[in-house]
Image 1 (cartoon, rainbow, N blue to C red):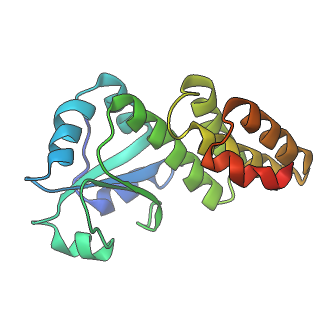
Image 2 (tube, rainbow, N blue to C red):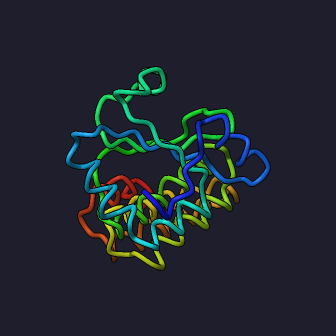
Length: 187
């Protein structure tokens, strides 16, 4: 997996992100997992993915058959599993399963935004969600990003008009979508 600056372990990754505001990204994989093999051979070989991981995260990988303590600690039940954590190793977000490069990049931005949201860093969350809306509006995660963009704006400002405008935008762009149905409470 050349091209990605993998850290030795979670402690080293945590030290690296401590003062940067970045997140630790853990990749749990199994040598016989088809989704893991595709992640390694296709997704991780994409220069855009490498750029995202090297500049936005401190990545660390765990082979579930070798690193059983970390697999148990994070309750990894399926591979590949990706976990975003803070500098102390506290899990903030996770997703499971193979994604091709474009969807992986969108998922990385969504997970970053949700991680920032969980830390009440709403402006940083908005930046991550906005990236998806602007750069990958047709991705599978775009409706969820749009939904949380509205919630983050509301939580940052207390202005409920952000919620109604979010619903209107979602209803136009993603009618009938699961996240649009959730946002319909704001209509």
